[in-house]
Image 1: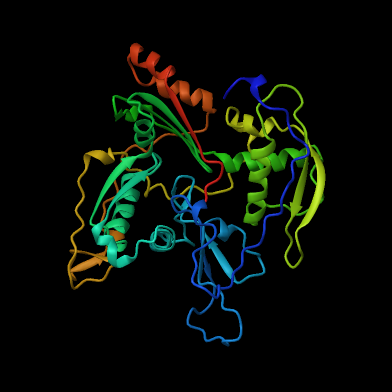
Image 2: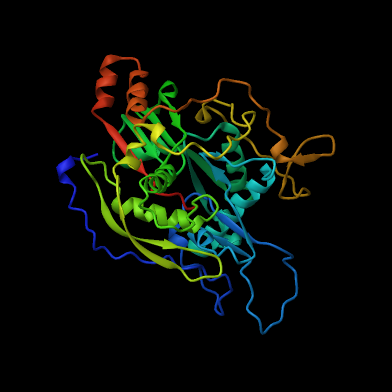
Length: 397
């Protein structure tokens, strides 16, 4: 965390900029999205509602069919789009209103856009490439299998290698043994690694992350009556969540005493230009302390995914998967079944084994619990002296 007295003085004169609305109309020239570099791993996708083949007047501007990444979060509520998030709380965002097939299609659309528009790798050249799929520890085997099928079958890569996120982080920093703490937007994971091998007994998943701290910031200011009288809602208005994330990143610190700051809060109402409200924010050290005292955070408003989907705790690195393809079958099917082929998402058994931990303890307690689960005293000492922290302020994917 760094020394308390090492933090620079809080600047109250920092200029706060208004988040612009996304231009939802197609550009006259074929250029890539301006927000391409903000996309990470595929969590935000937005699609225009209505008939895609609807004829329009050539003199009228044409809506963009799909919008990805942070641009999708900055679309005005008045525009005819629906927002979809394929990943929620570290798992596929499957529900009665968001079936698994749609989740897979959205993941494919996001990755295909990244490859085509950002990396400039057209579909007809991808067979000459191999892919490295880095997956978070929160994912279960069935989810990983679905992602791998997208890479090989839909994105047309020749081969793919799977790496766990914690292992990739450790090797990327030249280490072989460490306790890896990954704070994401909606979940936090702790995993210990010894000599390049993950220790499954040390894995702990916490159902809170950066977005929960942002929501706690709003709740704290309303509790102290310092928030302007505007309709701010980080759940139903994604652009409000972006604003809260920026305020959190610039003003929230873990420090003793009173932590206050003067900031500009923006309001984004339908049919009106963004408004600016200067206010004094208080208790800015409370929201980040929610990482260590989860009871400070606003209760989870997202229902957990169906548990039958996420109960496979086998080691993904010890399995070999084969995805047979036949020239006469469509892209959405795998070989087998009475009819010769069937949907690939019905191909895998559901393992009824112990689910991965979903603890609600604080981050410090989770780290200690994870390391103490490693077993040997010498290994525990080494892990307590070698920790690696990764932080994603907010997921945009």
